[in-house]
Image (spheres, rainbow, N blue to C red):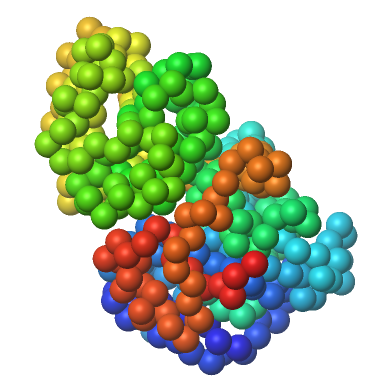
Length: 348
Ligand SMILES: [Zn+2]
Ligand SMILES: [Zn+2]
């Protein structure tokens, strides 16, 4: 089968490899859709422990497809079921796992990061993922493409749950990429009164406007003004930083209202993770500064349900579809912010 494998920093190869063997407690999924996310781009640009020194890994952790074969001891799943798979697996017995947060397990392993992923014709779903409930069966109304986007959407839902958004809140999203737009969509669903979305790239803002005309896009150098205007000088109730920028984090703090919630969603490059901020603002304005990473399985299933019920749309974020053989172009375009969501899919 064809697979897109990371061999080292900036060394990605389309290769012919064997279809994976599965154990008695595992599943084999024939992949229909897999999308590129910021994590894939980071692994490609900066390398990862799973690749290099003779090791390589098939990328792809946002995926959906059809069960092609079922291990002998697996119950609850059958061949030809349409599924999406939460990529994060825990050890199953630590306090985090038992508490329902396998994604925070110290022994975390993820499909497409530590284990071979979904940018391939087939992907092996390991025992832990099967037993922990990572494999979600798709309602007929959900396409493979929408299902593959449950993963990023559920990361965004995890963040939104910690923003305690109230009806009418003014919400600022910094970063108008696909994740930033998902944050806007989720906060609109939660009742936000106004959604401001800021980016340095005019083309990204344009794409955002055409997709979500009710979001108020704010370009470079206009952010303070726009926030003052939208809030009568009070500051925003919620701000989400969906960009890997220390400057954006520091500026966001200054734009918060009293009792505001600042969500640091986008991680920072390792060499820039110490940020100088006016911490007196946190003190005198009682601002909650928080962050999240990944999603738990409840949030994963909840997002599949939101998509199935058409409470939220994600398919409209997809702008580019490639064959696996075009991986080099796909990664180059995703890395230079062409379009919004790019991936490997035949559509549907
Ligand atoms: Zn991702
Ligand atoms: Zn664990």
